[in-house]
Length: 77
Image 1 (spheres, rainbow, N blue to C red):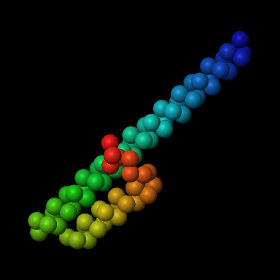
Image 2: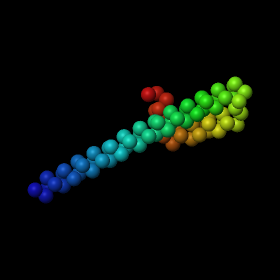
Image 3: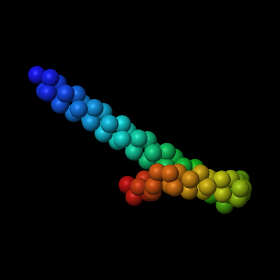
Image 4: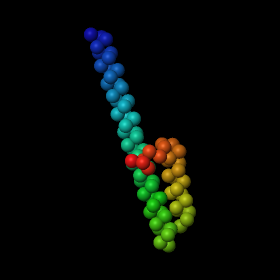
């Protein structure tokens, strides 16, 4: 009986770990999408005369930092 409970506990823990990993992936993809949208908005504002190159560069640096940390998978989905 103890062996069965240990196996069930292991499976539950594995399921929690996998769920947390998936949640982290989804959150990173969402954050990447938001950063990409901010970059687009900053670029549009710059091109239309209401933004600045500095704002566009700041948005680009934030996006590049996110990609360095989390990868660029959100760009391909």
